[in-house]
Image (cartoon, rainbow, N blue to C red; front, side, top):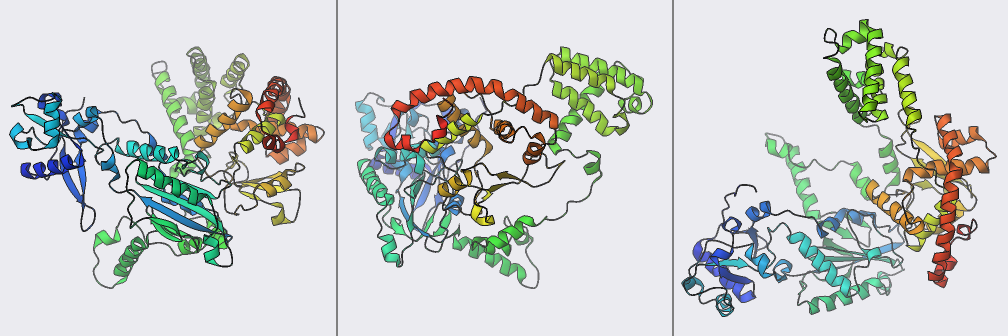
Length: 634
């Protein structure tokens, strides 16, 4: 356990007694014997200004927080104002905003007696000091205290300063609204997930005590008619009002808004009619004031020049207005040139991570060689005793094999040597032969090629789950070819030895038309996937678990699976396939093509059984939505 720390509050003993009286009136005071609480849990109080009339009560609970293990819960799902920038208005929609801000939400939460005992506030009190309080009389009636006991006064609520308060408050608020029909999974904003695009055009989110709903309404000739259109937001906020009445929560009447086109929420200011969102204007004006101050002649405070935020650059306003040409120009800029350093050339054309790995491998080799060849350093062996170095390298490869080190580590050790001492490239035949023998003894496992039938099954399941995603692609209407799509790949893995920016041509019959129908309102600047790699992998595995009852494939299986499909479609034209797939290694392409057959046999049988199991469970609309090609292989 960490050593107890000193905590200080700003309230005197007499002021604490006044606070306790206020808690008692609100039913948030819990009194017990002083011996029932841990002295190391003692909390203090201090206040932080909220507005002209009220201060925020902060519970200094740091000593208890340090002794508790905090497990992050609903706080990981909190939304963020920056997500509002991803709403696809495109000039055809307006964003009608509705807001509820629950008053005193933290203090409305009633804690259990056990949790209250973990937050004793101030020193122990004499019975005579708190005898007039209702909580004291309740404690006497329940036998928790006796006459003459020193008592501990605890806060029986959710205190600001409790490290679990955000998780508890967030989850409670979400569950309350969900119980009354709001917060559907496909309409909820979460910072770690991509912005949803449900058919209702409505998204919502909860940030502790703030409930924000955003309804996309089709723009009509008059704004009055636009805002009179019935939509999902009216149903949600009617049910949320019932939820708050049920839980005795009171939304702040001055902050309540319904179908407003101009709101401030979650640290952002949104103008739904004009399609603008950004920081609150007051903050932007504060930055402008700093810029004006720095432009004045004369001496300047260094703290202003070195402030936490730099002035907004001119191109920011172009992007905010939706100037796509300006965005493309900005994307093509190379940025300031990095300072030239010797290490940039010495480390070769490898990433910083690969350079770090190779440096550590060379250190391991040097440590291993030192007791065995004490008269020479690694540098001397590489320059004047290459034959001796090769013999010891062969022994080192054998030792790595016997110690169950990875073959990749052994290969990278030799690559690191060749990178540092280029003349060794043609002198390490012996160690490389051992690596090849190692590969035969323990064959490398390639990413399994994904058969076309599995791609159909996963895509169909994603559509049934309403998981369509946006595209970083050129649609047929953009280049006047009805049957071709082009997908841009910004950072391909071969960018260091091939083209820095690459593209993929998709001309499979029917795909282009399907994409145009599925994404009729996709803005041209949106990515195919704007979530994290982990979020994509999680959904990819969820689809496989539903379709295949397992996760045999990786996202990287899509590439070799496409290679094998095109190999058969193009009459085994490997040269054309190598160009289309941007493969540098002809040998790897051959491996993918040869390994597909075994994969298809196993997966095909499993999918046939899955189709037979699914069909009785699907409704008529779902059956019509299934692509017939999913069943063509059964």
